Image (cartoon, rainbow, N blue to C red):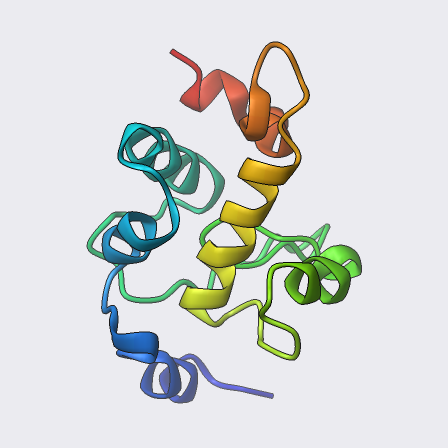
Length: 125
């Protein structure tokens, strides 16, 4: 089992970015960044200054800043260009969220944010 200490040491500074806020700046358009910071907070209590997330929902197994579900991770991370990367990898976690946001945006109410609709009461303005 991976301990939190080992995980933090392994993931610190991955990909040249060091915080959630920096990854969001890389993977999301400026106009979408505040919403994605809010969604990450609502999903995992993430702060833009966090450098990693070990948040895991004990019932669903949803993991990381954007609480990706394990059963979908392999196909979605591959589609986003991050095949083989861990859900704990902060860069991959945010990149896959970006992929979902910009490619699963047909919902007329929430657009790309519809992926996180269960927490909409927290992030919808």
